[in-house]
Image (cartoon, rainbow, N blue to C red; front, side):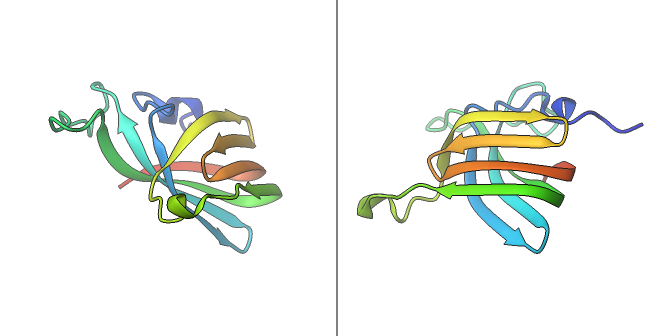
Length: 118
């Protein structure tokens, strides 16, 4: 039996993690993330002196999307080159996913939700 979605986020601080990119392809959506790992995560390394987290790249992959709503926020000219978007709200419940962040709001339902760390 597979791990539950919630358990895949064990030892990842989602509130401090950031979104790097949103990629849409057919009935799939991929979110490129910089996960903030907690000390008990197997890939954790002590952060550098100028870092608040152990940053680790990863992906959230959604396949078989049955509902998708992307509400991109308008950005100020100085923010246009922003590379990391802070997460404000994050929720996965069954096949439903909701996230609000500096990039915008993402709401979807999908048959498959996978959490991958690189």
